[in-house]
Image (tube, rainbow, N blue to C red; front, side):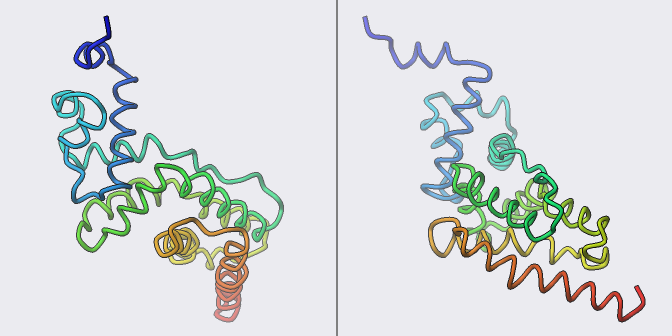
Length: 206
């Protein structure tokens, strides 16, 4: 006798159920957007009732944040190549190919695209998950310790501009940037900014 959907739902518990719910969240965000991603729709897509969702997460925002955080790949700084340019290229490659090209990346991109309509959840994703886990500051601090750039060149703007440009490209083009675009970001934006910061620091005696 075929197993009923109800029986299958009853047996799926713990980590397996959480994974199914998280997967449903990511698909909902990428396909219909945050505004339409209700707890009811997520539960239906996950193949469970609403109660498991409300027992684990107080609100839709808590569920979305948890799903993104738990599915975000580890964003550790790359191996030290001895040069800030090659380190930054490695970081942008990782972000493009392992984050933005993954289901969690599609979900994040969707959230960022809805930032004007839903600024609170977009800000929470950025401030609580993306910025604290970004490997860019560590890469730049490492370069400063080598004497390759000035510590004063490591500003919040420099730390966020690379990932932000990757996200913008993904939003506008529907896919993460390729190698040529990543090289342009590093060579035409990041390296000049770091060099200008170092020159300013020297000129002011910093």
